[in-house]
Image 1 (tube, rainbow, N blue to C red):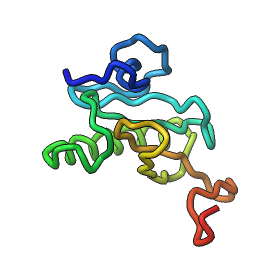
Image 2 (image 1 turned 135 degrees about the horizontal axis):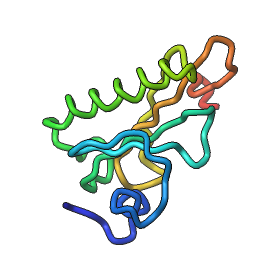
Image 3 (image 1 turned 180 degrees about the vertical axis):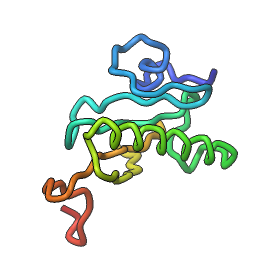
Image 4 (image 1 turned 60 degrees about the vertical axis):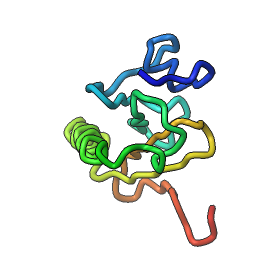
Length: 117
């Protein structure tokens, strides 16, 4: 498996850094965010190291969508969400990842605005 020695997410995939695992399959791993916007905020990462989602092979797109849907439906089933927002942000950790952010009506969470705040 393609790993980067100093990548915190690669270390999580290897089990070298403890996380609260939410989902695991052949190519993707999901865990609760350490600094969540709301309860259930989850990160989905490829097990192989890619700097951004733009570096990932397109062939993994369907599997990534399956992981997103599984995590999202589980959050809804557990009552932590009515819907979800997705965010793909690549600057904080140089390992491709997707944020799955649980949403409920009136939760006041602002993920993105025209003002960039």
